[in-house]
Length: 141
Figure 1 (cartoon, one colour):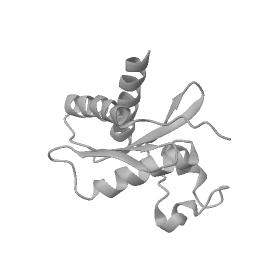
Figure 2 (cartoon, one colour; figure 1 turned 120 degrees about the horizontal axis):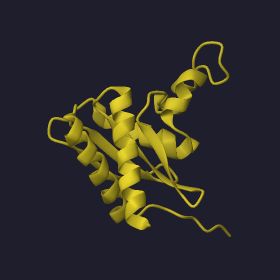
Figure 3 (cartoon, rainbow, N blue to C red; figure 1 turned 30 degrees about the vertical axis):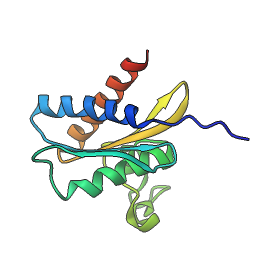
Figure 4 (cartoon, rainbow, N blue to C red; figure 1 turned 180 degrees about the horizontal axis):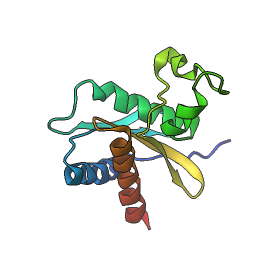
């Protein structure tokens, strides 16, 4: 039998809060998605002004990070022609993201979920995702 560690809805809200605070600081309204460890959506927020097209992208970034247990950014180089994961971005109906902004949430060595962010540049998305994780981790310690 397996024992599974998973983010709760309250945890997801804390992740979103931290990411939204950072997004407001940098002046970029974001779409923020949080999934559980099995890549199923727990919570989503599109900040006022967040790009409509970024809704699905944020969800897919969180899906990828949770499902693959790695950052979406790490797939970027690995998915280029001649690289080991070339073409992986077309897998699973095109849901696998290769752009920064999706980061798994790890607690005590276990991936318990993921956060995906979209609307800014890839580095802004990743910065806000990490801010959400930092905010969450500080709340549980």
